[in-house]
Length: 283
Ligand code: SF4
Image (tube, rainbow, N blue to C red; front, side, top):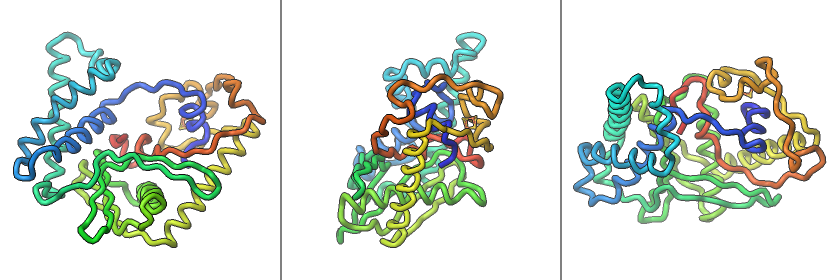
């Protein structure tokens, strides 16, 4: 939806991207908030949540040692330790911000980091991860998504709403019930955005997803993956290969040459790209 060429670089060429401190901090904060609900309700204090930050960072670093490169430019070991301390302090600040939006001692999530997947009537598969799913005693669903950046500025709400509708559509298809509420918690600015979808909205979302997929399929058929320059380019790792910036893309992999049928699936990648108004929010 933002840039066909960026889609190609990420999904077809699978070009590596440099880890960013903002995205990594977001992953650590998500993990700490997920683990917070392992504790008994009364123990879910801000102090307990802050204490989860460093172990989650170390666990992530053990799983993805390349994240160590984030601080590799530090002049010496002391400077590196100072940078890591600042990074962790930033994550703890976001965890603190969470407590200004919700009281986790009063919540018992039904699911955390829930993988959701469904297929539309056309056969197109949709997949995504829901940060948290709350289910009321009467069976009503509330989807909660944590954003570690700031709330989108004017004109950029549509992207966040589309992501929420995407989740709602997949849950409607898998649970047979339209979620009664979708809630986005923007920890970077302490703002909560809620949205109550209905079936009409979700049918429109389904048509939009199908239209995006048709556009992707056309690009597969023609080999035409156009750059769509925007403020997003400021955070794009692939400018050196982008014609909009004087670069030349690599040849398409053989499996993606024009005429080779595309496999139909859409992952919710909305979180992975920063919106122009929230460059720090990559998760
Ligand atoms: S630099 Fe901009 S136009 Fe080029 S691929 Fe990246 S986002 Fe698209």
